Image (cartoon, rainbow over all chains, first blue to last red; front, side, top):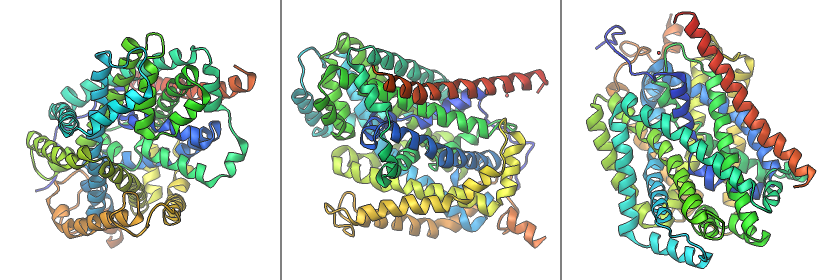
Length: 508
Length: 40
């Protein structure tokens, strides 16, 4: 069955604003709100932010542009895009990228369930005057040790997102994200302004923004910045690739990617101001240090939750607003993850309704272990979070195989910013950057005295990562022929066994 | 708030806000230009 360009009416975003809003919603997630403030604290304030800006420029923007080209030209999800850009032997790479993100979808639905639960707590006035962090710790422990609650809210999050994705692009994703993403920014601005005007907030701003120059010589800080950037921007997840399937024909690549990355960075800074300034203003510096080193969940659900009861307007206004921001950030990212999975299933010839039902059911089952056990959730976060770096490498390799100059020309053709040799250099250097970041991460894991690095049953060991990645690699390689044959044809698909546009040209 | 904190807040936070505003303005101008050319 040949691809007939005249018979396919494509769904596309109704405007550039809609595309950018959806893409920023994809990038801004719970990590911007609970992970970024902690990473800034650990990384030396302004030092970390400067390193993060650099990481955004050399890694995130070029990679998002690559993903955008993959999606917009192939008009297929991750599997079809890799098949059509690299050749039929490489469809498994798109499968790997897709499954890694689905692995994140499973536990991220649980995390969004937590956010919804705490929003419900907040609107019912749970964080009232006089509450302390012993009480909020007990509240958190009571919640996560109750399977009925964690699974119920996991189900609510999955069904909510399933309903949005079921309604398709215009009536679902776009309609929801055009409202929720601007609303999220309005809430973050309100929270940041409130936090900055609290007496004593200046100490929080100093903690956040003033650099420690010696920090630039700290390799751990650079690693933290690159890892936070890779998790936060969504570069290499395949999510931007999926949204780019619905781009207009003559859409910009470079400026949109820059706006998404900068908008995501702004959301992080606003959340950082809201969290850090509140902690420093309401409590002692010792409490603040304790709070930011208490882990993602500790900072958010124990320490910050306790502070809402101690600030004017905290119980009924700022606590609900804050947890609403967390819900919106989580759900807007979750929508893109589910759409990635659904898009790939649709490409296999299934209708949207059946695809959504299948993915929601798989998500409900796949998320249960993480809902029942925090160690499982931490393990999955680590395994697939680091796996994203491999997915990013695959996107860069796809560009190299397709031809960096050819890709650069196509990006430059419709971009509002000049895509010059800088893009080729940065994508060409990507394997080296990957080797440094990934190698460093592995070295730290091997030398971590608290872990037996080769034990596959430890939460954060290399053994558990390699085992799960290895199983996925083998499964995808075995399925490669099936995937390459079954995924429908797009405008770039070639007839017969022609391996890729590159190979066809070489054969002449 | 001391001067050092104010300067770095303006540079790192203000710079990000400025970047978002400028990039969004360029995108808006380009979109307006496309509409004027009679081309979603």
